[in-house]
Structure formats: C-alpha cells, structure tokens
Length: 165
Image (cartoon, rainbow, N blue to C red; front, side, top):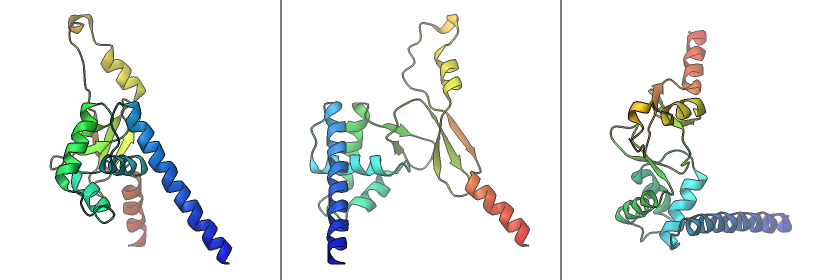
C-alpha cells in the first residue's frame, strides 16, 4: 500500500513537471522569457480551456503563488496577446476572456450557464478570408465570430425537467 501511494505521488509530480515543461517550451517558441508567473498562467490556460477571465485565473493561482497580483496577470496576458500566444474573446460584455487556441474558430456562449465553447467553422473562415475583389486592399487582421444560444447540457436539462413535471 505504501508503494502505491509513493507511485501515485511520483506520477502526479511527473505530470506537473511535464505540464510545466510544455508551458515553458510553448512560451520559448514565441520568444517569451518564462518566469514563474508566466509559466503558471500559461499552464493554467493550457490545462483549462474555459476561456477564463483575469479574476478566474487569479482565483485559481493565488493560493499556490501568494505574491501573484491581478496586475501581474493583466501584464502577462497583455504580453501573451501582443506576441500572439493567446487571443482575447469579447463575447462577454462584462469581461474579456482569454483563449489559448489561436486557430480560427467561433465561440458559442450559452445564455443559461454562460459557458463558452469553441466551435470549428472552417468553411466560414474560408469565406471570410476570401473577400470580394472590391475589398482586396483591406488587410484583415482579426475576425471574431460569436454565437449565442442554449448549450447541449442546458437543453438536455430543460428536456429532463419537462419529463419530470
């Protein structure tokens, strides 16, 4: 039994090291010097694809890094945005959210649970970037496609409630 607990602890430690190494390599690929705070924010974004706000990142990391401030998180995310490591998502009118997936895709926001889901839209992206000849002199640098409605989980919950009544 003691051996199993040691093995489990070692596996968790190894996974944490691998995640930190992946975060470090990812930042280095974008020419960003990895600091403790930058690594922690990047690791969080890589691990949780929830499109978090600054407040959510701060709440998740502050207990493990007590010296971490919201200003540091804002500055870190600003650097990541500037270097193209992440993208800002403005689907929420109250907060800017952050997405590690920098490939073209849309975002769907559920009006009930407020979750944000990545939606691949390859044909739509192709259409947007193949604009008519009249607008060929425009340089498109950013495209945001926001979809809103009810997610599958909430919809299934509504149907379940109807059957239980």
